[in-house]
Length: 146
Picture 1 (tube, helix red, strand yellow):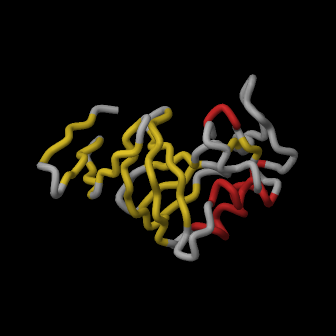
Picture 2 (cartoon, rainbow, N blue to C red):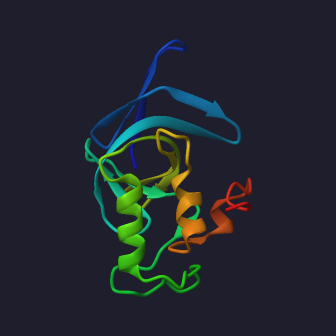
């Protein structure tokens, strides 16, 4: 994903693929971009779309693809794709999330996202059994207690 950083130390904006995210938070070893997401659509058990058009892939989890499959080498939960999509919809659809970008994946922003009560959606999906944790993308071990 192409991005351009504009501004000075006081107010920074990141312009990414046609949208603006305010508030760049430096956190070694990588920069994390904080942004809000009003969830307009849930695609499947690990991907949603914000009202701004930004597609978000929840960090460090994997849910089944809509056709019921799991990618080779990907962790695979026992729950169906429909169960994962429906559970994420109940958690997030219409909600305002606070997210911290961790990277990109296939044209989507990867991020840790929490609801207004501070509940981490990746953790909630793992705890429900509708998604599997993916330790490769969780080097800090945030999902160990889910």
